[in-house]
Image (cartoon, one colour):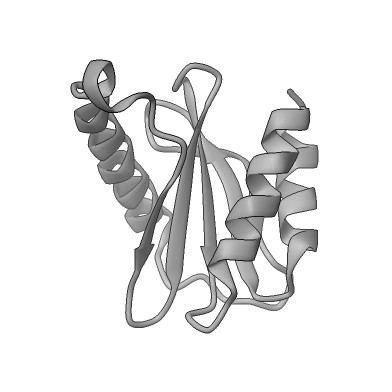
Length: 119
């Protein structure tokens, strides 16, 4: 899976996608980044902390996988952005996508899942 290409393609889905990045188990963003011209709302340390929290929530979801099936994505809407997370590679990496609040997240999620499944 070419993580850099995935991130670039996710940013191309919609101009309201602010960020597309892939983090590892430490929460560090290893691939992708912010859309040019869009300021990050979080410092690098805050982004890593946020990613670690998302990874922790995915870990909790996995405890119910035998009953609910594997998680496909999660989306949270905040006052200033929406964040979509998608586990990759048997959960070794997490794709994190943030959008403007008024973005069509359903369309972005659908197209992102299609991209990920094709890689």
